[in-house]
Length: 552
Image 1 (cartoon, rainbow, N blue to C red):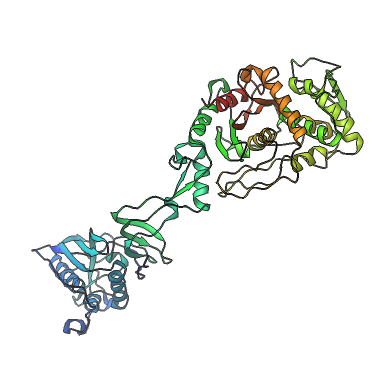
Image 2 (tube, rainbow, N blue to C red; image 1 turned 180 degrees about the horizontal axis):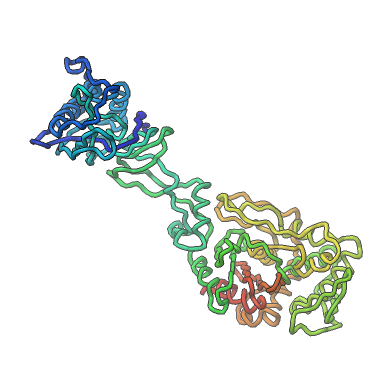
């Protein structure tokens, strides 16, 4: 758009258009020149700002001077109008900027009346009036005012400040008319349907605000009207709209229906108000379909960095398959306890010892001792203590993701330099191993998709790739085991009746409580949920995941 000429404005009220007052007063003229050469313009200005009187001029004197000022302004005798002020050298260019910025063609003033002593400018009389300006795009009307001072010898003058042009105009601001300036802050961040405003979802408000600041909107058009712009020509405030434009939009990958389900799911009554977070992904593309959370600690769905418990057994199993060549039928004896590096580990209540257990059976019932025993025997004792870290990075894409729009997420951590008891606890998602629901949803998605697709929230956002594709063999093994967890294992109480679902539960100890985890997938989405203080994965996060998988 054509940038308005700079017009500084600050301070008190001010006036622009005057008609009537102590008698009807309407000036009609053509604004075709900045005529400044008449006798009135050339008359010497006798007001001395250094001799301002503390006594306000009379109402009649203030109104008379204001009418003369507005008369000159309306007829575009701008130098003459400026000479009616206490600072002509400042007023003259400002009045010219007003005319040029608004592309003014006609200016009239009405209802010029005294309002008595000014409460803003000491020693001044306030005079109010109405302004009617024909500008680019239409006619603009507004109320305004000036403060009239007088010198000690009785000479009156309009006290110049930029509010004379428009009330409250800032020092480094100006007025423009016609095409309204674009204002990125007005962009609407919407779901993938292109219509649903994400700010209607409580969990998405902060995310939407961040995306609005960092992503480029599209599809909008500006309307016409009058606006205040800053020194750089950026829109500050719209004062008048002649024709409406279309709000620019930033489309995300969020599925409006699934987001609504997620918002309700994290507040489900069995959770008893515990902090919860959940993420749903399209496992084919990595598109984030829903992010929801409760609690006072921020967005735990994408930043709640916690020990993921037995959901990490997905990666542990993959490492055993890929690095050692084991299969789901390989032995993984499930004992009541196991000691590793001088620390004793137990199973969750209800897990029965099974000395002939296989990896698949141990995975289905989530036996901790089985995975610690196999992890130590085949990986740590063979000099590959970083195997779990390497598998997470190389196959499951663990790293510093950028999901788009400047939205911050917390990176998971599976240290490569594990020592002492952490060498055992890493295999069951404890110790120094941490993750978020976002990462665990991606783990499930990688299994179902048989390949890693980095989660993103903006379509077309760059997606990091994993150094190597998960093998079809390993993906098939994991899909079979996760299906057993959903149909007959630890997730069955919530997900047993759902078709095509694979899952893994997790319970992680933290300080004086436990956290419940569950990650799962169906034919369309991959999901993960965390409930802080959940007694177990299935009896806390299980409720959230079921809602998302069923879409209700």
